[in-house]
Length: 309
Image (cartoon, rainbow, N blue to C red):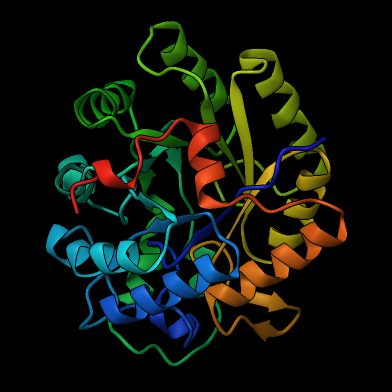
């Protein structure tokens, strides 16, 4: 029998800007409300960034995270997964500040440096709400998202060894899988590995069925039975790719960080709507949906009682 599918929901992220969707949560209250609703819809893991409530700009401020983390924990049993990717242009220490302060069960961990192109998202004519948004996107034609071997080792030691954090290993291309295997060989991370393969970001591997099969076969060869596979795809590719992946045995990630659309020409009204659609598809395929405690058991997480919030 197939394992129950772990649905992750990425609530707000650091990619989309407020002018792109009225549903994108910005304030702590909005992040709490949408996180709780996404968990109720079936998300076992809630992936979280913070934003400046004044203008929606991605923020690394631990104080902002602490305005929503305890409240979400009080209202759901979901695993709360804090970003270490942050937003464009943040230093490594800024990206880690909230996770160090909160000592969560899980954080994201990007497994390699890459060109991270969002500039094409600024091409569409729109009324920009804030003056930072368009330059933020356009500047990515000359931006490298830095995650050196030294950076990755630092995160693994500070959060993994120091706080008992487990990682969502974000792999945007095949080379990132090999980077992860390198750290496994060195003993800096131990199974089970939660491997999030990512498709459709400009600068990473494309959102194509052949790419999905290639990433899976590569991970199978490198990690064997020692990994838990999950898939996210950007934009309109989210549901086609996660559906195909689920048929192949993957867990899935959805949410407004990765995709603003519920269907063709239809903006998603909330994160919960994206989770609910994913759940309907998975259950129509005859798959069960994992509870937060089932996710904790499979991923060997330390538990809600051991976090710092």
